[in-house]
Amino acid sequence: MFERSKLVPELMVTDLANSLYFWVSCLGLELAYQRLEDGFAYLDLNGAQVMLEQVDSEAGQWLTAPLSKPFGRGINLQIDVVAVAPIIQKLDQAGFPLYRECKDTWYRADKIEVGQREFIVQDPDGYLVRLVERLGERPACSI
Image (cartoon, rainbow, N blue to C red; front, top):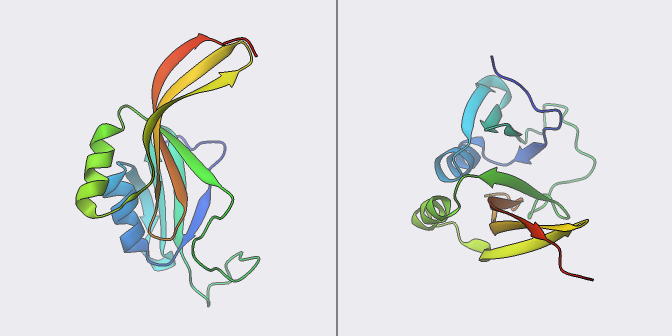
């Protein structure tokens, strides 16, 4: 049975088909289900989930202000993946440039550092998506 995450962002998109190509074909999320009549899709990748809804001025959607690109200003969505290299290759082949090149980064979390190989890409509407390959943990350096 499909298990829904406790927190699932719903992103408003301008073209659902174009967004599905990016999220499914390039990033590797799977289509859990969709409602074509509502311009809606629910995506999943090992528990990382996102909902996409096509903007429809007649649908009474919850929009707090007019949308203008890039959408999602002030947020980036992090998704853990097994390996970032194959995704970067798919994005390159599909013509999606990286917003931030791939690099290894270590973030302090109390007394340890958490390592991740990461890059950032913008989806067709400008949402920032950070794909992360976990590198493990190590003792934190002194502050």
